[in-house]
Length: 124
Image 1 (tube, rainbow, N blue to C red):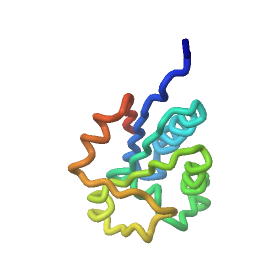
Image 2: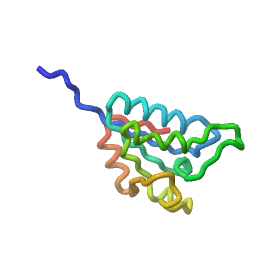
Image 3: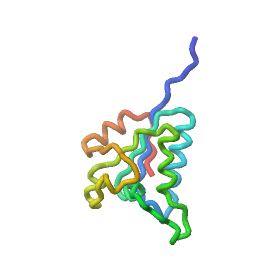
């Protein structure tokens, strides 16, 4: 009898701007920890969370670590399902070429399906 368990699917939704509170860092840390335990991770950026993905960030002026540097490690942890709600980008006049790395764009109409297909949803 096999004791191998099927990995669970976790969807992390990051909705906060990159600086000013600790929610983006908490979301990232939780996603990385989940990936280390070989669970399937979807990482979705929406609302002001899309600002976390802007290229050329520099948080030195606010005596903080630049979040974008840490986000670039997602792929190293096996998190390749990085999604961005397209409406959040367009309403903030951000193009996909302005982002740190290529992402998958998600339509509003597909958001509920993503959530429904997840075993766990963490919304920060």
